[in-house]
Image (cartoon, rainbow, N blue to C red; front, top):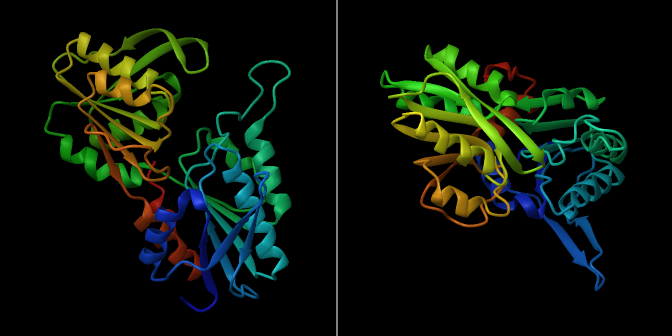
Length: 310
């Protein structure tokens, strides 16, 4: 392992962390987990981290044990006299709770940021936050990477002159518009209304998709309700085909069944969250090379702005 740098992984992102470390040119550091009969667990570094720059890779998707495991690793590294502690959080959980959208609710994303800073992080590296303003919740540097860095070349291959970019909701319009401008193609947006979380009540299409190959882009796919409903609606409106690109494959509840039964021809995701099961319509692109290169540039005090393709 490179002098002065050590990379460790939480259990939720072990496979991805191995690939990131390999891309950087290292192997994962040794960390041990001890479990008590009541479910309590303890983490310990089995090698010295004194005076080292410690990178800890862990996505914080549910269960909350993944987040708490990350906090324990940060605290352990701090108490072991690490020089700097950089958390690499490919998927930042609770990011949908970025504001008070109704009375008497928590701002979960801010609470998570507070806990990470209280634990002792010096920097955080993450990808496609559900809301960009979460960067401002931290009082330490935030390296916010974008899935578009991974997806752009794949989408460009699909541009045979009949392509149109699309957003499954108004919140994703900025992301889809960025692709549309770069590729010089049209833009379509779905307008949705929800009665409650994870349930779309009504959806309409803004834009002409007739005879087009539609590419849907979003930051995450949870229950796949919005994504599949949008895809089916585009086909009803005369689209030739629909492909979807989503950074974070949350894929909970009925997501896999909905994708199977939908008009989506292919869903391309990244490995920020490991897939629960393989699926014929789902293809995974790795973010390991991107994170590995950003870590290398960070260690060498080089610019990483070339990776900020929005």
